[in-house]
Length: 108
Image 1: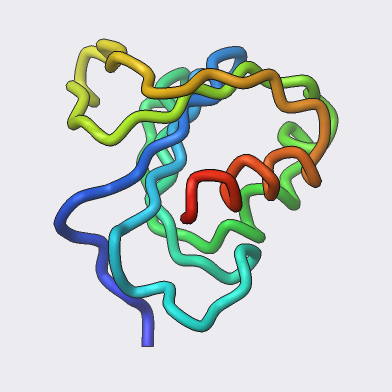
Image 2 (image 1 turned 90 degrees about the vertical axis):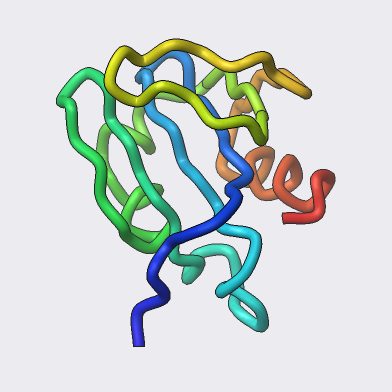
């Protein structure tokens, strides 16, 4: 069963790609990060989709574009205009392992 995304999200903005990965507050319990269901927004291509985190990190454009500047925020953003939220934390992520650490540090 696919979890339908709703309610509050914890969001990560990958600035260089202008992507946002949104993690729902509930629905991913007892799953490993790769199999989390998330909302993926690509502002450049004007697309939003529900997918697993594995589907995102397995993309060639994800794997080949490290490092990323990643901003973490919880507030809603205007997805139509791409207006940015105020980040609670900002990190440069140089590898997938550093992204997992970022998620761990924020208790995602």
